[in-house]
Each structure stands twice: as structure tokens, then as C-alpha cells.
Image (tube, rainbow, N blue to C red; front, top):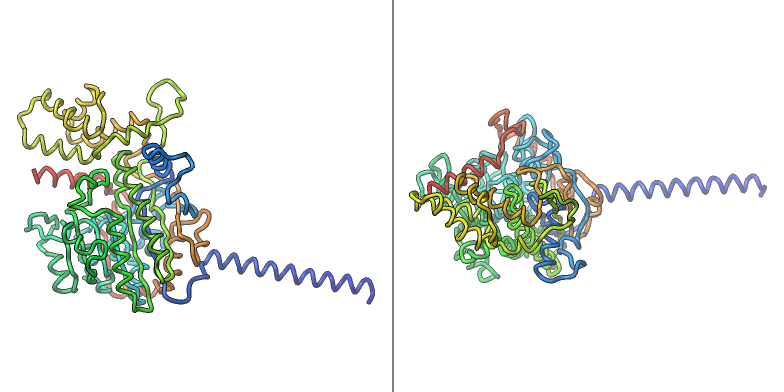
Length: 534
């Protein structure tokens, strides 16, 4: 064989080998990006949402826990050990998303406008992964600590043009919609949206008793308090599905407050464990598993209220719930994956704050947060109740009450200034942010907004088939793509069916453009209810 022929053959072989390597690399990359490697048989998927939790929330909570529990600096949260990647959060209408558009990105894997509940621009419904899972034979569940009609859970089981349509969302969640019932288990708050306006505790605009309708027309079992929940807690009794559990008129209290009211409200981890057991039991003889969405809802509210004491307890409870899901997966005989992320960051949290001209100080004080025994929200409600019961109190008497009954025992602050107390008693409607500011200043924690920010948020996972698609920095819609591909369900078919069966009317142009401040509306409603109740 001539030298030239040998060189030509070697060149051809090298060329073919290079081409083969490139093809394999492209295939492997495509497989990773599309989540192609999914289990062939029965599977469970748990999707967790830490509403409003940004990267700074983890730094804040990690250091707080290390301080309060006397841990070394290398002792981290469970979430830290399962960090997977980051997610970009912008919506279709704004660089700063709200929870509705954020959750629509997860449920539909599509970008939409702020305020949209599983609805696209032009008011066209988009099928959700939960709906597609139900149609495919999976058992489904929603567990939250806010109203079950709030944006995140609503985006998985209802379709309206704006998140403020909570009365309609409640009806669709129980099954009064184009797809009939798609949820098998609901645990959370928001009972008032299921009760008629003629009933004590009802906040609907109509006289429909949705709880009664759910039981009579759609076969739901219903529990409405901690005592009823305890019948099923820790596997005491089998949970009959479908089960609707509404444990608070609106939101379940912040964990900081709930722990002193444990006889009234279950925690996020307790509800999650109960849901996991119930769904596993319900699917033990099925060839399909379950899809469960769990939301640490009130991390977001603590951010809106700029209350770091409330937020660290919410994140710790979420971290505890994350560990509970991992434990469940480890003990389950069925293949399962946990993926968790946030819809956005809330509050523009900074674990630092310059409070005087002495710069730099490079410190913050976690003990200030540890001293608090109640949230700023809870203390504000106590103040309103006291003022309603004692309308003739002088400013001096009211300042004494605020300092001795609220600030010192509730915030753990013994050096409140006259100016701080005046801010509270002279503007009681703004007591909540005033209480939160007292904590933040002393802890040297900073906030840039009472709204959301555009910062990228973290993704966490147990790992498993297809989860490599969420490595690195991805769009929030990529999380939604993973959910549907892991379950191997046809969301597009659900979208087609929805568009054939329903027409969504626009609430307002302002809603589409994201110009409605939903948090302000929520807060105003909460304050009105509180005042009416006292």
C-alpha cells in the first residue's frame, strides 16, 4: 500500500470518527436539553414552588439557622445540598413577573401577561400539566399555605383572564369547568371564597355555596379545621379522594404565628406529608402514579411585608417540607422526582443595610430576628382589634399598649423610640410596615420594594431522569416543559379541547398589562375583613 493511499485512508477514518463524535455529542446534548431520558413505567412527580423566594432568602435563612442553633458555618440547608440551577422569570408583559404569569409558565410552559391564570395573550386558555396528567390517568393534588384560589394553585386547575376572579377559580377547581374535575386532593386556605355572601365567613360576591356544591355535585369529601385534619394526620385514617381541605378563611398564618396556634392550623410539612401518603395509597394499584404541586406560599407575603422575622421561619418550614418529600421518595417503591423553584423574588431583599454614615460595617444581626415571637402582620391585627375594643384610648395610652403589649413581647425590641411608636399609633393602617421596619433596621436587613424583583431564582431537585435539562440557567418555561415531558402527557391536546369548549372574557386592559397591584388589593381586603370582624 502506497504512502499516499495510507494517508488518504487515515484521513478518511479520522474524518468519519470526528463526524461520529460530533453526532454523538449533538445527540447527548439534545437528550439532556429535552429531558428525553425519562422512566418507562409508573412514576410520581412532586413540584414545589417557593413563592417569592430569591437567593438572598437562602443566605438570610442559612445564617439565621446557624446562629440560632449554634451550628458551624459549613452546616447548610437541605435546599443548599440539592441546588440544581437558576431560572429567568420575566413575563410576557413585563421584565418583573407576578405569580400568575410565573405559575402559567410552569403549568402551561408558555409565557403570558401578569395576572393571567393559565391563559395566554388574547385570552386563550392553555392546557396545564395537571389537567393533562389527570386525563392521562394520574392522580393529582395541590397543597398550599395561601388561598387555594390564589395565583399559583389556580394556574394548575383553572383558566381566567385575571387572578382577581377568585370566585370563578373556586368553582373551576372543584370541577365546574370545561374539563370537569381535574384535582383529586386540595389542602390549604381560602375558605371564604367557597362560602356564599349570605354566610358568616363568606367573601364571595354571589350566594353560591361552593363547598356544598363540591360535595353534592362533584363527589368531594370536605374537612375544614385542624381537628378534622388530625383524623388523617400520620396515617390515622385513609384519606378518601377527592378531598377538599380548607383550614383558614384566607391564608394560613405565617409559621412564626402558626406555631403558637398549632391546634388550629396544620403546617405546610404536615399537609405535604398527608398528601403524599394519600396519593401514594390511592395509586398503589394503578399503573400511573401522581402529580403533586406543593407551594410555600407565604414566603412571598413576608417579602411583600418586608418582614425578615416571618420570612426566615417560612423558608425553614419550606426546607423542612423539601426534606420530607426527599424522605418520601427514598422510601417509595415507585420511581419519583422532586423539582422545586420560585416564580419570582419578592421584596428586593438584601442581607445588609447601611443605617448610618459609618461605612462599611459589614454585618447583620440574626439575633434580632430570633427575638421576635410574632409577625408584623399578626401584631398589626392585634392593634386594630384593641383599637376597636378601646376607641377612647388617648395617644399616650395607645403608645403604652403598643410598646408594652406588642413591641417588647412580640418584636423583642425594648428600645423603641417615640418616633417609631408615634408612626404606629398615629397611622394605625400602616402599623404592619412600621413593625416590620423596626425589625429590619435593627437587624440591618435591607429591602428595595414591597413588590417583586426581576432577579433570577434558584432551581432545586432530587435528581433523576430528565432533570439534567434544568441544569444551568434556564427559562421558567423550561421548568414547565420538564414537568410535562417527565410525566409524558399531552398538554397540547388539552389546550385544543379547552379552546373548543370555553371562551375567556377580559376583566380589564389594566389586568392584561399588569397594572393592577394584586398585593395591595389583597392587603386592603384583609384589613377590611379584620375591621369588620371586630
